[in-house]
Length: 203
Image 1: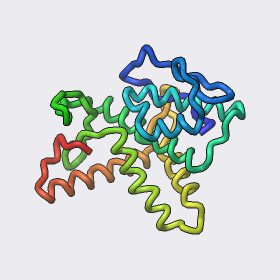
Image 2 (image 1 turned 135 degrees about the vertical axis):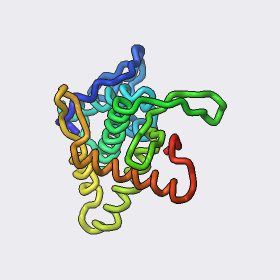
Image 3 (image 1 turned 180 degrees about the vertical axis):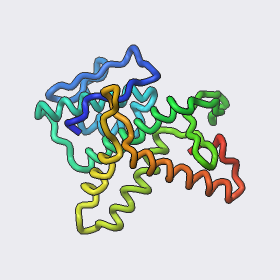
């Protein structure tokens, strides 16, 4: 991940959030959090709202790696790249299709990102995108490459799904965008086949 320091220009801002790499971890606000803990929190969704916080944390992790303060394990790299693929996908969908009001479990309403494909639309969330990637990419690699470093295969696949964008940030590669579209269109088609409303449906 040490070759990626520029990230998508975010539609949302978090003025009070700050992250800074140090030799002992990432300083987030007034707290110093160890590198492994930061990656765990990233994977658990601590920096999903807004996504700009997660991209900021990843930039600092990348800087720490460049400065030889931290060397992530292959599993940690997979976690970070999975987050990036899901995050870039959400940003692109937000820009292209906007958001839609969704009623939460507590009765409140919040605007969530909408994916629109050839079979309809669904609401997409960073956490469920990561779960879907882990299920459809990593479990497949673990099954098909049991004796050939499946985590490395998954990492390479995630890396191939992102490329530099014209504005100096990151974007999904053509194949990354096509693969995620196939994944979501297949899910929407399955929902329609089973008679469940496809738009908007939490995914």
